[in-house]
Length: 410
Image 1 (spheres, one colour):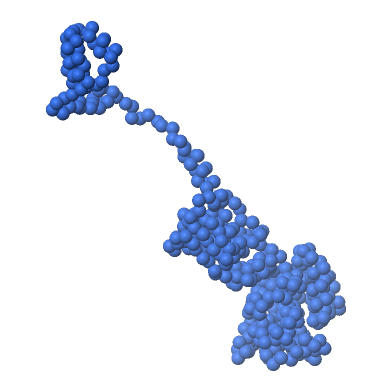
Image 2 (cartoon, one colour; image 1 turned 180 degrees about the vertical axis):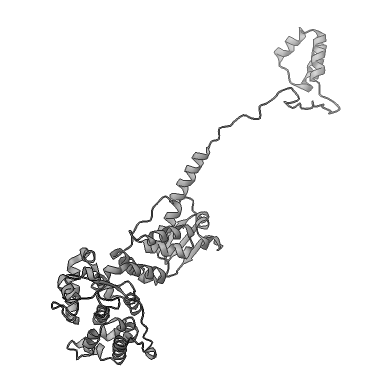
């Protein structure tokens, strides 16, 4: 290659890419035909047209793939469920704040809507406020815990708080579960029933209270001797004294129970005397008991109560009924149901009227008897017997030729 050709080649080549001096020297020894081909390849396209090859798919190239291959997900269904449970139970990434009487709870709105009709029917964005007297902060906390841990069995402690929250939030499943427990006499009977009755009082939950009162039965006198009985209001004590299954030996003990309630705060409670006394069924008292109430009373409170005009009318109407078996309708004094008559062998006033060991029950004696009942503790109500002829004390059976009838007018 001549020096002139080399320079020319170098100048043309520079239009494509720069060449070093060494590369130029190597080109001098290159076959001219090869140089020409390189020059054609490297020279710029003057028209600016570049043809691109159409892309070919892998399927067109002949590749085939198995579409039934099983893939291992990062989260298996089991792992996903476990993660979701942990998220819910530990209250992570919550999306709603529920405020109950000033106490805040972070919750998942999805869970609230799933288990309660209350939140299902209410549109809530960030916060919800509950100020109903039916729901306590503890009750809501227990209810939400049950939603997130349904395998938990409701405990006796604070069961009323939980039940009231379930009713307010409209949780059918939890309500049914708790109602089933309340219906179980093995769980709620006698002292347990009275304890639950007292626990429901702040909520004024009448149906549950009435149910528990039907379970008090032989525990009635123990309950009357308690501080809790003295703290009942007039409606609550009236409901208790009106119970058809109150375990007493005579209606006189019901009357004395009312006197005990008044004795706790007579100056405040005397205005309720007419209402409370209507719970006493004077028509179930034998004539001698009614005559004892008509007699002059030596106890100051008994004197005030027995000489009250309304009480005197009820006593007279009861005496008339006992003697003539008539009901004085103008006083709205109905015959009513009997009680659950019982016998305590340790009580002198539980002897029959004809027995020489019988003693008339005064309020002072009744108060002493309640102390005796309290001192006996939980065993007392288990020693009581049904008031039947076969269960009478031997001294009573000897003097009592016929079994006492259900009206208890021996």
